[in-house]
Amino acid sequence: MAVEDEGEYCRQIEGYLCRKNGGHLIRIVGPAFEQVCGWAARGIPFKIAQQGIDRYFERYDAKEGRRRPVQVGFCEADVLDVFDEWRRAVGLPQAGRPGMAGEAGLDESADLPGPRDSLPAHLDRVIARLTAMRAGGDRALDSTIDEVVRELDAARAHAKTARGDVRDALLLRLQELDASLITTLRERCDPQTQRQLDAEADEELRSYRGRMPADAYRESHRAAVDRLLRDRVRLPTIAYE
Image (cartoon, rainbow, N blue to C red):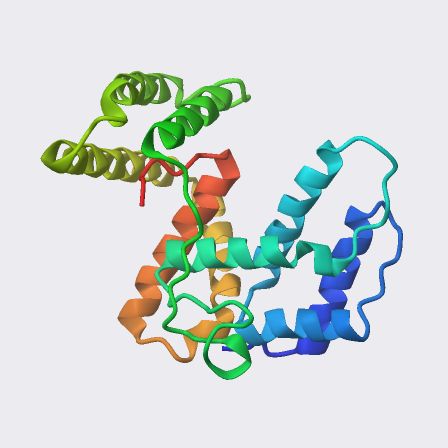
């Protein structure tokens, strides 16, 4: 499900990369152009590509030493990772990576999860990110976050040794906590914010809408809105998949 206008897509990526490089112009031509056209051919929304580029720059900016302009090819692994995460979040088929079976490495049925943290490490990271949320300006969720952090902290103590039904029950509880926080965020949205999120979700899914059944599109749209809500407040994913 390709992005409709590859040329405009490449110009948008070029402009964004220029801004991320502090105004240093990085031309997307030759192999770089083919690479970004490959993103468009996969149906990677521009905002998802932005997030992948941002992820690379977060690591790059943390390094010491002289900065060099970042080429678009450096960002591809992160762009594909964010795209895979986005597709899982909104319930779309997973895309293959270059070199996998299928035309041009695109296998719509391939599910390629990357390595994930252990359950205790996942809980540690979630607790840290939830705690960091309380340092923001919006304190409306403080009491709810405190309750979740206390429960996760207690779960962390036996997460490493949990097996069988005990582990299954813990994973189910993490899903419930995740869904509960998203529901709380959704209920707190004012009409203007909701309209903005709906429009952003429509734009993200624009390349897919024509080929999706109406029910499937509604489910993916709702999931996309939830993901945008999560990103807006930097809410970590509590569920462990």
